[in-house]
Image (cartoon, rainbow, N blue to C red):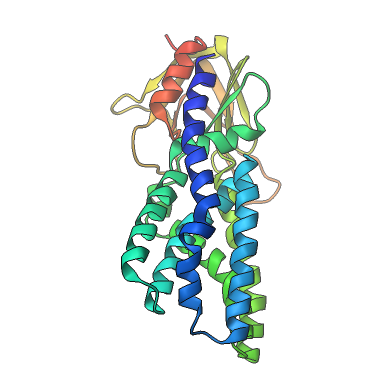
Length: 296
């Protein structure tokens, strides 16, 4: 199948992230060790053990393609860049730091790319189905998402490091509150990796808890067209304010959708003959739809 061949190309990008992460103890390890050299023994030991645990967890997670491990990888690779910059401020060689940090930043950018996301979310796909991530809103990308990522990572590492520095009172408070904030942040980030457009043998499924209460199956015979959105389209906007190319799926007959409501247990229904969606790879989505005869 064409989508399987495309997934094979995406795996090359995922392996780039895995291989570079596996090499980090040899590339970044000595630099981080230099940065830790002048710190206190307890702090240095805590940081060293934490770095090794993080490295091992991310390495294993990167090999297990899953939406949850995608979050882990996307949090860890940018964090490695931050750790390298910190080691430079603590006395490590800035020339080496710049080279390793630049390469790691490039790998971090690859980990955030649509092809890598495609590999990880399809790690839980069934049979002949293809899952495409849906893009988050531009507003979230502009601030809340990076902030949530920083809070998640900071919530995990700050408390233990403060305790290792013998700041017992504030360390205890930060450990407790940071752990709670990290849990909330990780869940929020994970929820965004479970928003999909899923191509299945029967048609296409919209699986997006932010747009509809339950997944919606649009059977192949019910789809009239699938492609770039028309200018001034009156289709129901389910993009959540995502930027970039928007796709429009129209149906032969109106369909009933149930958007999420604020009132628990309540249901509101809307009728629509078309919907606007924002898959992370719109061109690939259109090609899949054509391959599976979902568009005219």
